[in-house]
Amino acid sequence: MWADSHCHTDGDAIGPAREAGVTRIVVVGTDASWSAAAIAVASAHDGVWATVGLHPHDAVKGSATIEPLLVDHGPKVVAVGECGLDYHYDYSPRPVQREAFAAQISLAHEYDLALVIHTREAWDDTWAVLRSEGVPARTVFHCFTGGPDEARLALDLGAMLSFSGIVTFPGAAEVRAAAALCPIDRLLVETDSPFLAPVPYRGKPNSPALVPVVGAAVAAARDCPTAEVERATWVNSEEIFRLGG
Image 1 (cartoon, one colour):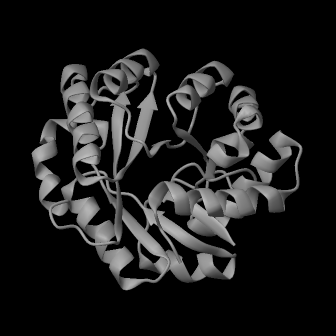
Image 2 (tube, one colour; image 1 turned 30 degrees about the horizontal axis):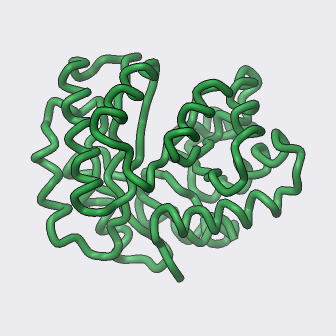
Image 3 (spheres, one colour; image 1 turned 90 degrees about the vertical axis):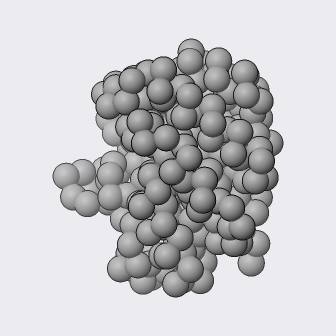
């Protein structure tokens, strides 16, 4: 049984995922409308949960736009995010990104939810904001793209590392090295679908059904049986998101 800890998908992908052995799926919000859609998908399907978040690209919309979805949230909402910093595109000004990130860390604390972090070309400021606001007890670095140094810093903060199809890319040796050193009880796998389809599916839309491909690549990087990654990431997803069942 596999768990996709991070995807952006609709209900049509649930059936194929289950046929592939993916029976836990976390659908991730990136603004108020996408978060509401994620909650709707999760509410309509067993074994599916949602997050409420404001992606750094959309930070200019303000964290106040998503908080109503957290007030009196039900058990299907398991995390705040994805949120964080993206200095590659700078679709929102960097100070605004930092403000929105800090606000969502505060929301994770307030509502006792996990925190899902997106960081791209912004490691130093990511560490600074986390240390300033206090790292939530249940924190995930989604689609981890750092190397061993960044992995160790994230692990030292108590976070889990979630690996995507990037781990299959030929040029991602540093990501594979991070996957190899990550303790097995701090490891997650994800698709980030419809993005980042793993090799050999590059150029095609990704889907939660491909999380076993990601898991197999993580296992290869760790030189361990795929079943070990499957079991561990299933248990870890339950613990970090309090999924149960």
